[in-house]
Image (cartoon, rainbow, N blue to C red; front, side, top):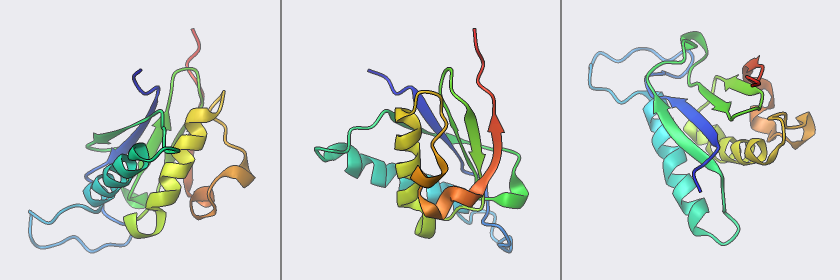
Length: 132
């Protein structure tokens, strides 16, 4: 069964306040975050309790450059969210916990106290669901 929840990760983001590198080939912070999420997601899917209904998809820009690294969560009939100011070191595990809680919610709204603490205040936008 295909995943119904999408976690889009901006792979062109730089961390907030990061100085642009002089080298055009520097790996972007968003790409590092995406790769860390993919690696951890594969580990979780391999465990007996790690069943997940989340697809992690790279995207080239979420137009949230002042608040990078950024990602969005969306699913049919659910509220969507954009999160920013994320890092792989601090937020990787909690992003996946949040995505799984979102996937299991009926409307996309994960109650405040059920959101992992490290990402609670990182919401940039909430987008109403498309109905019909």
